[in-house]
Every structure is written in C-alpha cells, then in structure tokens.
Image 1: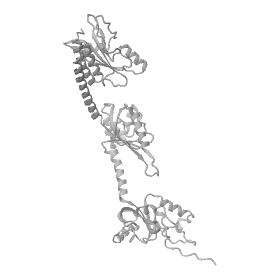
Image 2 (image 1 turned 180 degrees about the vertical axis):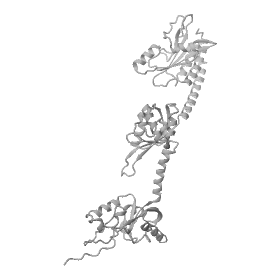
Image 3 (image 1 turned 135 degrees about the horizontal axis):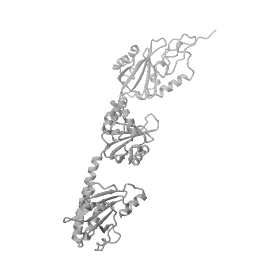
Image 4 (image 1 turned 180 degrees about the horizontal axis):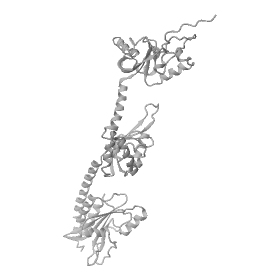
Length: 515
C-alpha cells in the first residue's frame, strides 16, 4: 500500500504561492524568485520541478539585488522579502514572510488599508504602477518609499500575486538629480566639461568644450589630449594622473595651454557630423570653427573630479571629469597691469639712481641695468660713427658687461661692428623706430649661426632694437636680447624699450657722444 503524501501548505514560509498541480507527486515550494513571472511555484505547464539547488540560487539572486523586493500572493500574504528590504525597513525575512498585508508592522493601521489596496490594485490592472507610501521601520520610524508593483500571473493566466520593488524616495531623487546634473553639464552648462577615461583619452565633451578645443563633439572621442593641445599637454596630463591616483585637488588650478591647429581630416569629419547633429549643438560648433582660429594660447581655470564606480566594493576609477573656464582675457589684463606697475617702478628707480651719477655714461648704464630686470637677458648700445659714407655703428656699451663697472665709452677711432646688410639695428636707424626679430629655427646649429651672423651673444633667440634719439638727432641703437626660455617681444615691450632708449639717448647726448 502506497503512502499518501502530506498536504502542502498554501504558501511556504520563504516560498511562493503554491498552485494546484495535476501531477501525482507534490509540488516543491520555491524559496524565492528572480522575477515577476517566477513568483508562482512550478506547475504542469512549466515542466519538471527545479533541482535541489534551484531555490537557494533564486534566493541568492534576490538577496544580491540593490533594489528592495517583496512579493504577495493572491490573498496579500508576504511571500518574499530580500535583504535590501530588510536594510530599508529593518524587518527581517523571518519576521516579514508569512504576514498578511502590512498592517500593524510595516504600515500604520490608519494607512494600511489604503497601502494594501493600491499595491494589490495592479493584480487586476495588468500594468505596472508606481506609488509613494510612508512605511514604518522596525525601530518605529517612518520612511517615504517609491514602489513599482507588477502583477504575477499563474500557470492558468489568472492573477496569482503581486511583485513589488521599492526604494527610499530620497535615494531615487538623488539618482534623478545626478542624471539631471550630468545632462545639464553636457547640454546647458556655461563651463567647459571634458570626461577623460583612465587611459587619458577623451570620452565625452560638451558643446562649450568642443568650441574651446576647436573640434567637434564626436570627432574628439577616443583621441589623446596630445592631438588637441600643443603646449601645456604635459601639465594637463600630470594633473589628470594625480587626480586618478590621489583624488581631486582642494582648489581650482590655472593651466596655460596652446591649441593645435585643426587638421583637414578632422574638419572634413566635422562637416559630415554637422549634417547629422544639427539639433545637438553641431551648428553652434560649426559657426565657432568658421570664425577663425584666434589666439591659440589660452589660460583655463580648471577643476578636476575623480569618477569611480558606485557598484564596486572598492573604488574603481572610471576616469576624470575636467571642468574648466577660459580666463585668458582676465589673466592677460591682470598680467599687463602688473607688468606696467613693475616697469613704471623700474623707470622711477632708474631715474633716481641715474640722477646721482656724475658721469653721463654711467647714468646710461644704470638705465640699462634697471631695464633688464624681468625684461631681457642682454642690452647693447651702438652709436652712429661720425663721418660720411655708409651707416656704421660702433659698440659703446653692453650689459651685463664682462669688465667690472660700465663699459668704456667710444673713442674717435672706434672700429665699427660688422653688421650685415638688413641687420635689425640698421633697420631701426633707417626707420627711426623699433624693430623686432626672432630666430625662425631653434635647433642648436642654426641658432648659433643666426646669432653669430648678427654679432649677438650665444643663445639669443629674440631681439628688439630701439633707436636712440635726442634733440632731433639719431645717436644710435639700443638692442635688447632674450634667450630661448623667454617669449618673443611684443608691442608693449617695444613701447617700454623706446621709453628706456629715450632716457639712454639723453644721457649719451649729455656725455657728448653720438653723431
């Protein structure tokens, strides 16, 4: 005589609602389920019952999810309660599974009927519903949660229960704010935003950053920064590597960079992209690129943020968010103002020091010495040799001078400097104005030949010649020289050099030198 199987309960303590099975052997209650359609137990339509490890695997899957999950059978009895739900509300699975409804424990008595009705309403509606409820924690506190409930059909297609996922509202709002912030930064932000991956390659740029880099938003993706920046790329990459290793710096930093000119292939790629992304800011970038290159040296006030995955147990760097703003104009004005204040102070100090010199030639050397501070590496003074014929210049002063004290003044029989035709000093005398010159090649051999031909000290790369004029006469030329570590002379430097030359010419005229 065969033994009769014991009757099965309507729902196991940690299982799903059990449906009738036409098979002779009893149905195995499941401990948990991975999805809405998995909540009901195995039926004849779903084939053989799962193996012995199936319920354990499903329970592990549910407990490993980040969302809080619970399930109810057709009568409203709790059949599932994962660990995230326990974390949010404090009720353990042993305390939750098997309870009918949420009244008296997870919801206030006054709210329980409304909460249960709205949760179970999806059972007949057939579509997912989203609600917000105030639930009660085990400690007696209240938590506002946002729920997403879905119906669970049985094997016969009739409602068998409800599957519910919920999370704290503030967590959901934080997520939505983060997403909204990311979208705003890449669409509407006035700051320039560049995301760089862990290999220091550009991953995402917003429209303003694309304009600043003179490229398109898609054409720049996956490219190293060296393809976009000519000078200053080492400083930028060093800052990015520091952020990846140590984290974000405490304050913004100012980086001077020089942009590379966009190549033809990149421009052609952008021309195709503009047709495709007319609505995604492409027209704005196209218009900006069509306005010309403009100044290539820029100052960017930059802030950096290290991006790490929130899903990993340990922080895994995903890259760096580089947020910067172009402050070139403000920094240029600031530097110009500081330079003008310093130079005015130097002229004032030089005039006071020269007024104490009995020898006019010494006073001229004082003016040159004060002018060199922060301005040039060397200064030369050449006077026009008296007599008819071709223009000849005689070297009368050089600072810094090898000999102690000022260089001796010229004598009537002084040997003219063998300047070649077209020398900047000769041009300055012919034009009665300032002339600037810069070496076109900076390799060692070509630079040595360039300076030797012009009779200048070794290492000279930039030169500025200012004519010496006094009482309506041209006395000579003052030449200021810079090495390779300094920038080329500009118009503001020429104005300052002419001011110094006027003071030097007055001292030379007082000494009775010049034509």
